[in-house]
Image (cartoon, rainbow over all chains, first blue to last red; front, side, top):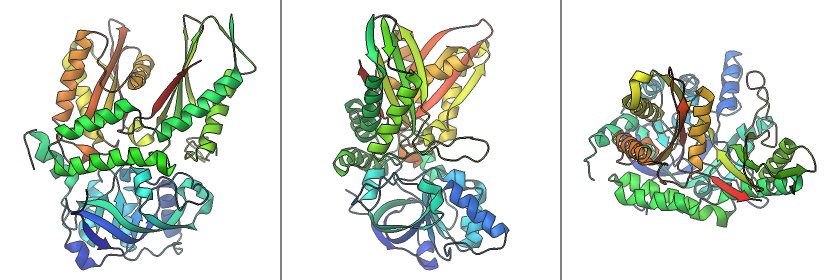
Length: 190
Length: 281
């Protein structure tokens, strides 16, 4: 299972991103930052004050995730994606700061699709509700900002063969639109 | 009068909170396996494999099925011949949630003051509790871990009676369509029909306690469930919203009488990680 998924390294070059198409199945290895609602709010407040963000977003990947607590001896708890659309309000601004790769679940707003097209980014979906399985793909985890936010703190994760599907590619094709449309007639096979 | 100690209630709630977050019940696993056989999308089948693998790995890894360990929604049916002793029952249930979420390394997601500072309460309390007084001398406790990805997609429609059966179907299909991949499909669609606004919302949530796919109480309800399931699957949303022939594992409807001028329809979506456990004291 998942043997035919393409291996990709993070951070990703602009060329690699440009070569991805909505629907491609990948396994990601490298660095991702976990950040969700409260952390995003603080990022924007920091930018509003013209201050420096606690992480360098240049070519960075953000994973919308807040883990369950880590058991002693473990690297991380359960760590599946949270609903990306709640971050839509903040995303175009962060893409201006260099953010290129996003991983979450669910569809994105038209403004985010535009920002992805404009900046040459990519949006991946990983397996919602499969947090235990996904935790086995995390090899390192450390809090790098906003420790006081608890489950919403910013984490730096090293992942290995982390499964994801390209959902919005750099041309703005959106699998959340095209995928269901393909099956709406209810007679497709592949 | 049978006596039940609040300490028994605390211990039971703690155990159910922990178990529900680690062990997907057999009815859910069977429904997922059946779905995989019917799913036409290859990507959908692969994702369903991973979802089932997650359910098998979570207990052995001792990590919860999903990082969102939910709001603890506690349904408690108290027999009228039971005397609960040893303190305040609300606090006993809250203490059970506190213990279960701490001991189980479950994520604490509750924030106090929802419209101001949203500070985490640190122990996943308070739970949301629904009491019912029933005949007999038993206490039935059900704990549901309700994640917000799905809960945020809940909807209430106060339809005109003239909109009838078609209006109900349209309202539910619209809700599932707008939710797309956000609530982690394949879903269980919980529907409450009738009563008042708040009564139908509660019916929709209670319907999610049923074993997945167990049909409604009478033939007409069961027929409406089947029709809505067909319509919802026709949306093509598929597993996690990426396209496929199966969007929902089941549709559950609970209904009750309502006012001549009303037709309340409540929809409460349940993600594929349908976590709930019950015990009878």
